[in-house]
Image (cartoon, rainbow, N blue to C red; front, side, top):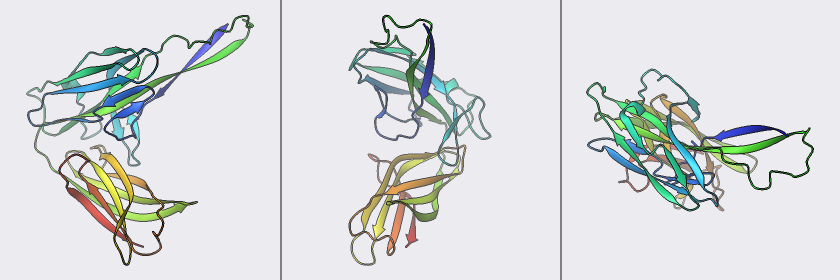
Length: 273
């Protein structure tokens, strides 16, 4: 029986949580920044599946687009610096039994030729192709026929950032508008960035009625604008809450420091409804 094996690579770039998951792999932390005197970081991997899995560890290079998507690149864009030449990983291959955890060690190696600024690469954990799943072999099947076996190969990546100097970044919010699709309201806006480093934080939307107290109607945690773009177009789904009338009042949108860090408002803007 002839078999065609299709490998489906599923990079996970849009989920921003304290723990990032894809397939049966959990990764923590979801973002690493080397700045100041920091030189080492440990990244925890956990296999939550029922089978032993093998993961290879490598680096990928991405550029961000203005819609928040990512494109794989091999050469840095103008003003972009890759971090991987200055990083060591150990180990580069991990075998995890069901529910087993292991630590990946990441070490920064600064060199005298490093220019001031921000360096970024993405650490990529890729599940290696395993054996055929149980039950795939069909005894007595017609060997003259062709079958297609689809084996998903999962991948997950997290950004690794090196900052070699004290730099500031300024963020602003603009172009706020509410668009309704069926019964879902979306707040669309532009998150702007200026400076030599990326911006990163949480987005919170509050509805402020003509009378009464404000109420949170939207939240996005861990959103970044990397140095390959000066702005990012964002669409935030708003929660339908009884008593919230988006035909009057106003919406206040804030871009703040990430959860579990000292609270700072980086930018805010209001939309009169």
